[in-house]
Amino acid sequence: MRSATTLKILLSLCLSIVAAYGGGVTPVRLTAGADPRENITKATKALLEAKSFRAKMVYSVSTGYKGLAMLEFAAPDRYHFITESNFFSKDVNVKQEIIALGGETYYRGISGQWQKLQVDVRREISKLRSPLPAGGMAQVTDVKFIGDEVLNGTRMLVYQYRFDDTSYAEFKGVTKIWVGAKDGLPHRIEANGEAPNQGEAAKANWANTYYDYNVDIKIGPPM
Image 1: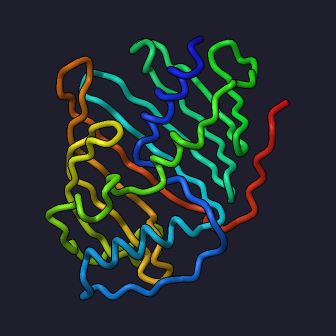
Image 2 (image 1 turned 120 degrees about the horizontal axis):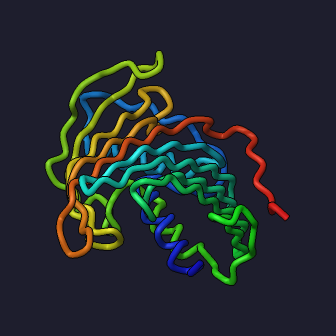
């Protein structure tokens, strides 16, 4: 198994999952009538300050590839990824797993055996630290407030924006984000657009759910 290539595949599939670092979150009260750009910026900052969270992502590509990704994060730099997809073969789902502890990386793939990789994933993971492009809000267009919704019994403010992200996976499309009206944190993000696939544009869709903010999440070496 080509470890570096496999790692990039896993991280690419987790494109819209937001990694984070830092201390505890101070709840941010958002106002529906406020500047949508300002509220999305505040929500992104609140996520970056979370000490821990879990995320689930369901994704699909028009070429037939689809899968599920799970992420656990614990500050300052502990990550646990699990992906199950038909990325390698459309007829077979393959489960893969990464544990990153600072500069140490552990990988388990088709063989089912853990191996320690001589790869530091922190640089790649840093690209997943925001639902925004590398240039931040400056690269975001068509920002608008959609309205109030209730998600899992909690009031949300829903926003929509568009970005053309050429910095990582070259995803271009429209994103909706559900931000808690009381805690100011993202609870769901959906993205629909296009991403290159073997030289051609393919339709791509993500649906990310975030939960267990600031709970005690233990992530340690598997061996």
